[in-house]
Amino acid sequence: MRYLFKTTFYLLLSSTTILSLKFFDNVPWFWGTTIVNSNVKSSNGPHETAIPPIQGPKTVLVTGGAGFIGSHVAEALLDRGDSVVIIDNMNDHYSPELKYRNLEIVRNHSRALHDPGALKIYEGDICDRQLLEHIFRETKPSFICHLAARAGVRPSVEDPFIYIQANIVGTTTLLEAAQHHNVSNFVYASSSSVYGGLGIDQDRFSETQRVDHPWSPYAASKKAAELMAATYNQLYNISSTGLRFFTVYGPRGRPDMAPFKFIDRVAKGKPIQCYGDGSAVRDFTFIGDIVDGILRSIDRPYSFQIFNLGRGEGVQLSDFIDLVQLKTGKTAYVEVMPTQTGDVPYTLADITKAQMLLGYNPRVSIQEGIERTVRWYNATYVNGRAATEKSTSRKSFTSSKERSSNITSLAQNQRTLDSPGDQYFLSGDDPPE
Ligand SMILES: NC(=O)c1ccc[n+]([C@@H]2O[C@H](COP(=O)([O-])OP(=O)(O)OC[C@H]3O[C@@H](n4cnc5c(N)ncnc54)[C@H](O)[C@@H]3O)[C@@H](O)[C@H]2O)c1
Image 1 (cartoon, helix red, strand yellow):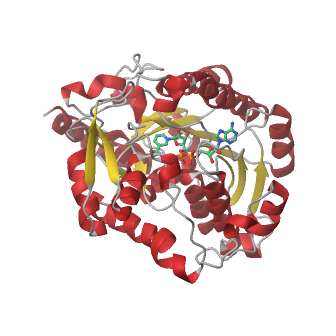
Image 2 (image 1 turned 30 degrees about the vertical axis):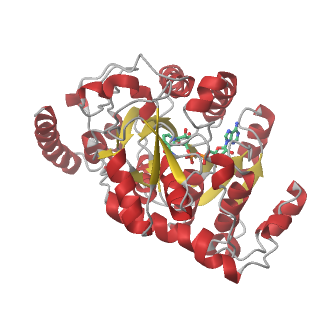
Image 3 (image 1 turned 135 degrees about the vertical axis):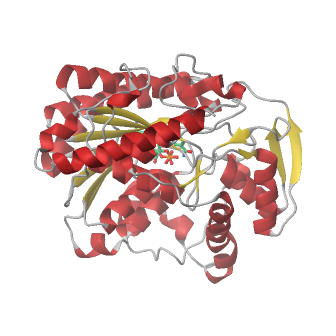
């Protein structure tokens, strides 16, 4: 009911917006009348006004560009003609080999191959101020897409300090660089985990809810990043948009997350460890839809915004597992484990605000998304293996010097890897981020 009311409200808002866009066609400054957020800046929904996208090629610094989401974003930016600068420290939260492989795919993008200025990659830490200064001077990015972070909920309970360093110190270091170098828009990854246990009432998570009770250091670090962005907006007027992603999955998905783990283990006929009775609900979002939401945010420099980027549909874990069985054609062997500290039982995004202010409209259903992910998994880890058994891929990645010289020379679709499953999947399904 509340959702219906909200949707109606936004529809009314959008018709007003379209009228005002027409009326103020030649007054670009007018669109900066933001705005709002959830809890870090006072939010009175009705004042929100959609702004038109900035068109034309941009230079975008993508932090964490070797990761799952970052590498897809880098490809999409190259696709549409932007220049991309990547910084990633290639840490071993999961196998760096997978990250080098992601970079190899980005480097093999036709624009990166034919236009030497289109892509630059730096291996380094976002907390390294000198390196950032060097990168800004050399590449002059005017947009930042900040995706680098130590991800994962449970490991943050075990070692919170890594999360504070990468996610809070790292974000602050980038905000400092953004204000010194007149960056036009600072878009950064937040997370659905900031909502903590608010889903216990089975309501949708909305940006207007207070999120003062995170359930893990990871969630707290993401909320802190939102607060730092609010502070820099207040102090220096830096435009920023925080994106609360809801369980992102798809090709090149992170091996420490449930979607990849489940597909991998079911495909291998190995048991899945499922924490809880399978009734937990997750809002799974396909990578292509997330990338679309990120690009829309980069193009729209709102003064200060926070958006949920989810599919907007709740899927029970038990149904998710059924779907994996269907698409892999294999049986799942489920070991039910007790619920873990930091796990939340329910996530479901209210995406009305992103729909209205970004034009975000997720298109890939969970059925199609799982099918595409299984297809990618088979091509990468199953079918291609025989054809590439003699591949020297693993040997190629021995030292970082060797790595960088080998990356471009390896054929991107021909190589298959040993699935990192057993090494990384002992902890069962990961709580939603
Ligand atoms: N995947 C999801 O479902 C999900 C959900 C919510 C939020 N997020 C957030 O989205 C972002 C991207 O997530 P992902 O799934 O692609 O994770 P990922 O781990 O695949 O990518 C993050 C990348 O950042 C790099 N990185 C980490 N710390 C760094 C540092 N200090 N300096 C430089 N590079 C560093 C890592 O090496 C990695 O390549 C993260 O901020 C994550 O917290 C992801």
